[in-house]
Amino acid sequence: MKVKIKKEGKEKKFKLISSWEDVSLEKWLKLIRFQEGSKTEEAEKTIAELSNIPKKLIKELALKDVALIMSKLAQLQHKQNSSLKRIIEIEGVEYGFHPDLDSITLGEYADIETFIKNGIEKHLPELMAVLYRPIKEKKNDIYIVEAYDGNIRLRAEEMKKMSAEQVQSALVFFYAFVTELSKTLQSCLTEVLMETRTQ
Image (cartoon, rainbow, N blue to C red):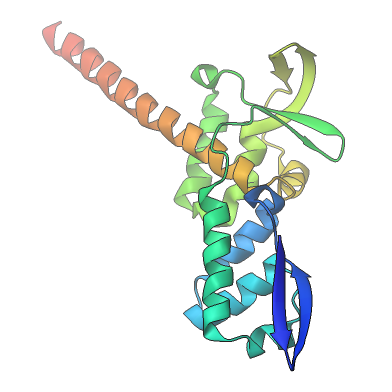
């Protein structure tokens, strides 16, 4: 998306992201951190991160122009595609979203639970590294991912290159799964407890 800025009678064009898919996980994490500062700082840093407008010029923008740019960015985020991308590609490597969350291992779930407990915003790359793994075998829409061994440090670095759109859709999908899993676990535990009491 192009942004026109008039200054001293001259008009210059600058680039602003054109879709939320243009925002990497790494950039999205920065945007989240920007919210910790004042609204002025957040707007300034967000525009700098998502455009090629020089920082000096951003400070000279009229408030109405800043508000317009920020609203355009918010619209892009709201227009994002929220459907889960089961297969993503990062630098020529295909990663598959865990193909069968019903068979998630205790180790996977324990790591995910730890990342969420310790602050999901700080551990999104690690969380994505658990949920997305290199595809070993694939035929049509069916694929097999590498087994989980807990060694995710390098893959978490790669996951920073995912788009924020892909991350958000995975989080929505995973949240729905965990909510359903919690209900099922609670129901099963209640059933086991009732059986134990009747014996």
